[in-house]
Structures are given as C-alpha cells and as structure tokens.
Image (cartoon, rainbow, N blue to C red; front, side, top):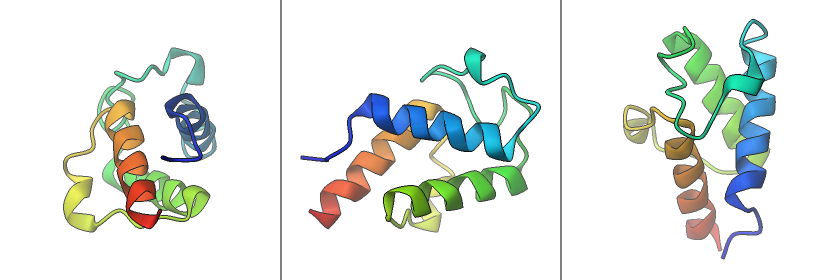
Length: 87
C-alpha cells in the first residue's frame, strides 16, 4: 500500500501545475481535468510536469505510458502504480 493517498498526490500535482503553468487557475483543476489539453498545456509543459511528478514521488514513469495520461486522475493512478512497484 502506498504511503500517499490519492488526495495527497492530487494536491502535489496541483502544486506542480501551479509552478509549471502559472497562468492556470489551480482552483478549477479537478481529478477529471484533462491536463494536457483543457488548460492549454503543451507537450513541453507536460514533460516538465511529469518530470517534477517523478522527482516528487521518487518514481519513474515509462515514456511509453505518458501518452495514456490525460486526466489528473490518470496521473494519480500511474503514481500509485509506480509506488506499488517500488514497495
């Protein structure tokens, strides 16, 4: 079991989004928000976001999986999956 809850991961993701995308209104981000489209996040910003997520949780998301991550919940699920693999 992960030492992080989905809500803790979500809060960290929102913090990272705020750093990488300062024009983004974090208050409007939900777990269903499509973070690589809905908010004008381009592929370079997405790479920066995912790199910070990997660093924050000390995980490595395989590059092949990045295309399948579109919503905040997708990212949360992938973080949980990678943390479980480390346990």
